[in-house]
Each structure stands twice: as structure tokens, then as C-alpha cells.
Image 1 (cartoon, helix red, strand yellow):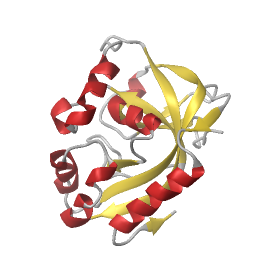
Image 2 (cartoon, rainbow, N blue to C red):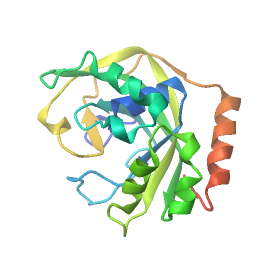
Image 3 (cartoon, rainbow, N blue to C red):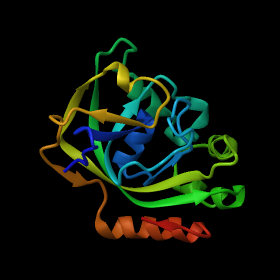
Length: 199
């Protein structure tokens, strides 16, 4: 069941479509956030522990992806147009850990656990340096029936969170990886990090 905000809307986290696909593929279980340019608080906050994943397309950059995953970006763009009036949401997630990283050494130990290049990860860490980089560990679920969401002005812009109409709710979902595999990945992430903030 999707978490509802105080306005009665379901919550969605905006993320590159190629990253959402990697999460759905079980290729990774983390996202990295510092906050959108127009974020109200000027830094990232985990507003909900459960949310939909809202794929974005316009600002994806192939050179910031590892070579082995660059072709997936092309696949996400194959049926996309900047004039689209709706977006398809196929993933739901639960935040299991919110890890705050402030040093390059810790970030480097996570490099084999995500699709991004070292340059991308480093730029995320250095941007707004006084704020930590949030590495959020997600338990991801594939929606049985993907949601087709109308794109409204409130969804646009460099922001992390958007609200969806309360009528948009998933009828069923299943985890993309099994319990044991997820536990193994979580252990790897925790081992790579010096300290974690438990939710």
C-alpha cells in the first residue's frame, strides 16, 4: 500500500529512468541523493519510507553510466518523447537504510554496487559539500499493473519528491529479488560503510 502524504496523495521519488530500470533488474539496491535544485529545504530529506519510483528522462547522461549499462539508457529513451502527457510507473520501494556519506573513501567502496561511474558518484558527493550524500538502500517491488500517471506542472523541475493522486494505487506487487539475496546485498553495503543511520 502506498504511503499517503497529509494532502492525501501517494508519494513518488523522481529518479533517472535508467536507474529505475537497474533497480527493477535487481542490478542495484541503492540510490544517491543530495536534493533537487528547487528543493524546498535546499537539501534531501527522506519524506517517506515507502514510495513509488517516478522515472525521469530529460537529464540522463550516458557518459555518467558504466559502459556495461549505457545501452539501457538508449532503451529507456526508445519510446519517450519530451511531449509525452503521461509517465509509466512500474516500481515501488521501501527505504531500508538511509546512509549519510561525507568522504570519498567510503563512496569508492560502493562502486561495484551501482551503475554509475566514479565521476558521477564523486560529483554527487562534492555538490553542496556541507550536506552529506544520502545513499538510500531500497527494497524494490515490481507493480503487477504499472500505473499510467498524467504529467502535471507540479511534477516538473529538479525536485526529489512529487505527489500522485490518491486514486493512483497499485493492485499488486512482488519483490524484484528474494529475501536472502537482498540480505546479502544489504550486508555488502553496510560493510562498505563506516556508519549507518538505521530507519
